[in-house]
Figure 1 (cartoon, rainbow, N blue to C red):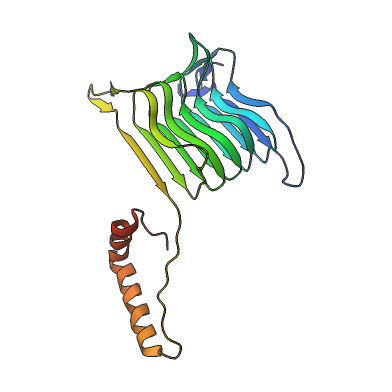
Figure 2: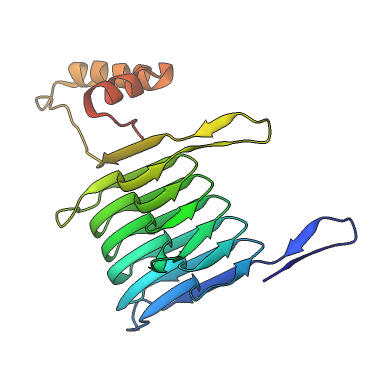
Length: 239
């Protein structure tokens, strides 16, 4: 899938987009969904979006071949029995290569495993994020190589059947940027859940209630509330 140039000389085209969407009221079975499967070269970006698929084994960006641009995989409310991935491999010697960044994001559903890179190579940053739903293991890198940063984030997810790892196994190395500087090679893992907190005040004690609410508003205004939330829970407040 090749790019060309427009009248101004800018690169255009060369992208691959796959969208699979079903109404929530309907039942659908799609065995495998991939941006690139059996080889080839994509000079642009690869985007895969899948929503409300009831039965599926794989959803991913590339298994064999090369993507010169970025890979984005977005899934929501699907049932996936094997895995969601950004870059993977078919077998030894046949693997995917991403020369740009790799992003995998999931919301809801029942997913066995989520991988940024599993058995392939990524020369940019790799980001894996999942929110809500049930997941098995969530890994930024599970076999292969990444020459950028790896970030894994889970929010309100049930990971009872697996584990969360920045690197399960594989290599995270640095690469030279345009200025010749070595960058990347960092791994960040964040796992948290939203929690609500309350202060109990005796019925009728309006004066104390007023003081508490005034202090809370003051802490929000001066930014101190985030400082305290991070200190005691590890995550910034969203309210």
